Image (tube, rainbow, N blue to C red; front, top):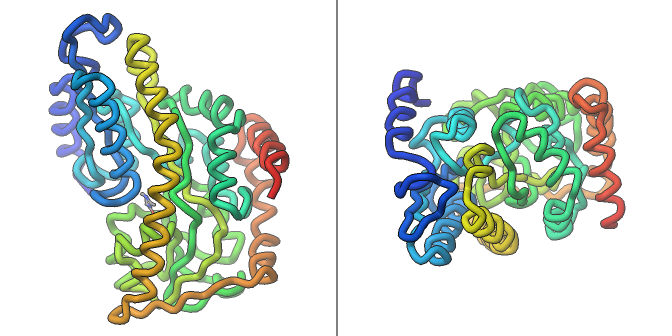
Length: 349
Ligand code: 6CS
């Protein structure tokens, strides 16, 4: 965790580097103008978010004949996930890949992604819903924009699985279990529903916390479990598919609204193109890391596949959390959840 003083210095340095465009007014888009933007991610080189931002930067540079230069920052360099949210809001970075799991104390509605067993089991179908959903791309986007964050797209990094120091096959196994979570309160609520003791923390502290037993388990897509080596300090991986890891491509709202038409269209088009690219990237990485984990004989991990019956037990415990979201979390009486559920039903299983 970078200290407050350090963050202050970083903020000044970033602001001094300029934001909208070196060549002057962001909206003018005159001949020869160049643009230097910063794009921060919550992951490191090789991981899905970072590779996404690199590819995004490359495409923008090519399309603009070199006029747009996006510097991509991997996780850690600019502070914690929450620090990064603040940097996007203040405009010290223009773009960020952001997980709703770190914005729940601010954008209450964004915690919709913390609900287990909400999206279809198929990751492909889930991505289709994330692409097309009006509840998310219009209604939820407006909620984020009240806080200067514009989510331009939502995309999955894969189905979430549990890793643990003991076997987990039914909700009773979570009784008093110390589970690491991201910071959004509804994620904690989802684990309390199983009887667990959730502990929010940054993933930068997670390997050590699992190793020392400060926490006994965590949830993430398989590529992340493998790349961050969490399986080395865990004995079990339960293929629970209880949720999807959803990330957002976000921009600072004022900065984005101030872009000239040509730049705005280029950003929008690139964001749309990247949906298919990132789907393939997460799929490839999740498949490869499943093999890596299975073949890591030095750090054996028992892989547990839940039966339909076992998944139903977890689902039964998870359903009341939706009422909690509607009644205690949502500021619009669950309207976004209702609309999203209709969209999910219309998409079919
Ligand atoms: O568990 C986490 O907090 C991290 N997981 C992923 C898949 N990406 C970044 C995030 O911070």
